[in-house]
Length: 330
Image 1 (spheres, one colour):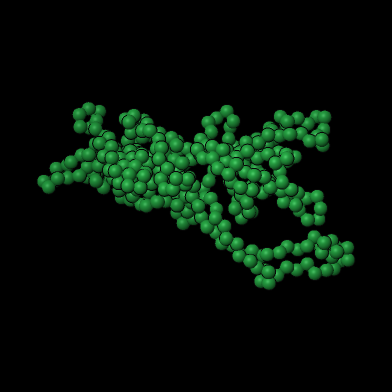
Image 2 (cartoon, rainbow, N blue to C red):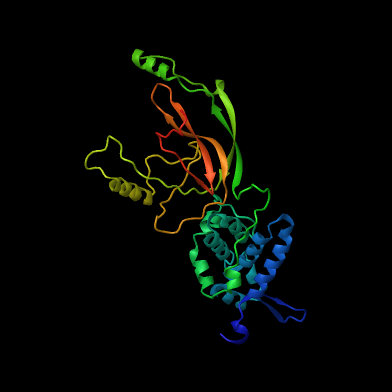
C-alpha cells in the first residue's frame, strides 16, 4: 500500500462538512496510554493503565479490521456490537497473557472488556463471550502481529508498581459460607454394627448442622514439581522412569483416579501437564510465612491423625517436606 491507504486506522470520524477525519492507530494507542497512565497514577497504577491503553486496540492492526474500517463510515467499525463487527480487543488480551503470564490476566480483563465491561472468566449463559474462551482465539493475535506494530507499543516495559496495600498480591479472593454436618459417624459404631448385623448408623443433618465461613483464592495457578521415590515394596523390575512415564501419559490426557481438589472436595481443580523442557510461568515475587498447613491424614489407628508442616512462601515457591521428615508434626 502507499499514501493514505498505508496508514493503519483506529477509526474514522466526520467533520462538520461530512469530510472524513481518519485517526491513525499508532497515535490512538499512544494517546489512550498517556491518558490512562495519568488517570491511574492517582492510585499508584499508572504503569498498569499505560499498558492497558497501549494494547487495548491491538487487534485493529489485523487486516480484517482495516478492511472493515475502510468499508463503512469508519466510527461504527470501532464498536464490536455493530453488524459485521470485528473482534479487536481479544488480541490485546492475548498479548498481555503472553507477555506477563499469570498476572497478565489482570490486563486481559481490562482490555477484553473495554467496550462491553469486564467479562466473566466462565459463563454458562454466554460461554463464547467468557474470557477463558476468547483467550483460545490465538489467530487474532497472530493476524495483528503480522502487521508489525511499533516496538514501543508491542514491547513496552512490564509494570513494576503494586497497587493497593503494600503487601497485597495480584490474587483474587472470594468469601464462601457453607452449611456442613458437624459430626461424623464413629468408626467404632460401624464396626459394632457390622459384627452384630444391626446398629444405629444414622446421621441427621438437621440435628447436627454448623456453618463454616472461608476466605478463598480464586483463579490461582499452581505449578507443581514432584518426583518419585521407590519404597521397600518395589519389585526388582520397577524403575523410576517407568512410573514417571506412566504419570506423564495420564496427565497429558487429563486422566485421574480422583479429581484433584484444593482443600475441600467441592473446590475441584483443573490440571494440565507442563513440559519440563518448555517455558514455565514466572513465580510471583512474594515471600511470607503461611503458617501451619495440613500435610495429610495418617491412618494408623481407628481415628485418622492430622499431620502438619510449617509452610513458607519463598519468592512464590512453597517447598513441601518429605513424609518422613522431622518437619512434619504429628
